Image (cartoon, rainbow, N blue to C red):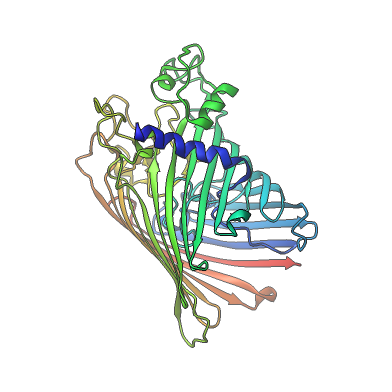
Length: 504
């Protein structure tokens, strides 16, 4: 009874306040009236597969195979008096990325128009976002929405960061969003939708030196049709997309027992493919440093919301150097350490008898949306949950899951990842950024491949140098290494020149 109540309260809370909040974790800090960005460069590696940290968390803009040349061009234009926070302002932003190589393509990772005030924003289109309580700069990736895949087109309304509640004198602030989006057509389902909402609460204590955070991100893929499915997964090839179904998706309600509208898959499970995370965090300001401790708890169904899958989740600690004194040599400005584990998944048996919740969550996989939690061939959540196409060729036949269902898009979702992110700089402005990740990969629950686990190291070191060329620009150089049993062994290099022009 308690777990049922917890499930209802958590989802109802996110629904009640979602109409005027947003959960975007990357704040919008552009204050210029107009900004133009251009970058040209390329990368190559010892293997045809692009190194893990060159392609991961890049919003689907870096090709999976190299070598490739890359050209980026972006324009952002804001309208209105941005100093007057009481008025409504408008913004239009477009960014195109052209990849030229073995898999040439033109991509629009950013294409949106928005109306915004000091605290709220409505936008339509696609843009870079990360959701969840996490360090976005050096993280291994937020659990449910990490910035790994090409953004979806959607309509979204919410806050711009945390908005203090006046009657609490700023002690309590809310941050959240509500969105409806559209998935690109895939091989298994066409014309499916995205439902997304998030709510986060911040409580400031001890004169704002300590801040406590808590909240939830809930996402679902729903609706659509397929001419490949038989009845059982669909009703005459269709998955219900009615307004009544949309209401059930929002409220996470079991669909009515109507076999003319809902497939047996929907009636046994739930309409739509639901997942997300429940997050908690604490931030502490010191005189010379800032500390951020966070935990993201994953859920795919009620068992995850009821914490039956503990200790699964993303654990993180970020330290920021806030010293303002002069320095003569290199110093670290930020260090992030994370540990991700997804080994429990509420147990290995789907039917667990008298217990209230089923197990074998099989994270990011779904037996109706066969491409899993992906968009345009990239995992939407943490990149350490990998598709079979991303593993070594001799592991494309990795065993796992239910024996009578065959392979799934996500072949590896039971992982343990230790991750370290480092950022430092010299007085000249040259920055060094490093991402170092060691993972153990166990495949999927239910049945385990006898070859598992597979150990893997993936690392990248990036140097950003300010130069005087073109009136001031930035040169980016990077080296990446993949070494282990899960991905193709690989060494790669990256070189690019980036120029930004802003007009106040």
